[in-house]
Image 1 (cartoon, helix red, strand yellow):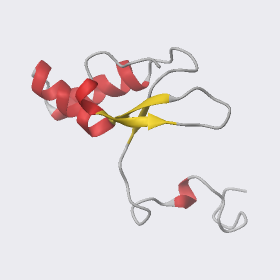
Image 2 (cartoon, one colour; image 1 turned 90 degrees about the horizontal axis):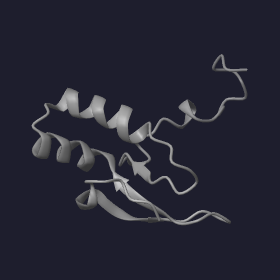
Image 3 (cartoon, one colour; image 1 turned 180 degrees about the horizontal axis):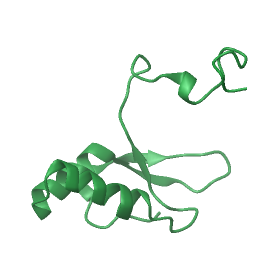
Image 4 (cartoon, helix red, strand yellow; image 1 turned 90 degrees about the vertical axis):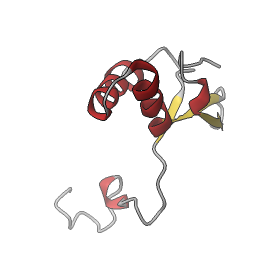
Length: 91
């Protein structure tokens, strides 16, 4: 498994996928907090740095996964799936 350098404290577990290698899973909010605390970035700088340099870094099939914690109530599944048979304008 590949690690994201400097974010050990943000590891929340191991992700498993059928037929794929296991991945380290990091809490995105914790990664951003680490950047703020360790590197003195403000929230906007830390988020921009994280998105560009960490989320944007593909290093192959073992690239770690970064999780944004949400409940089902917070997730709008229509952003991901066509739940109304194309009636929402995404035909």
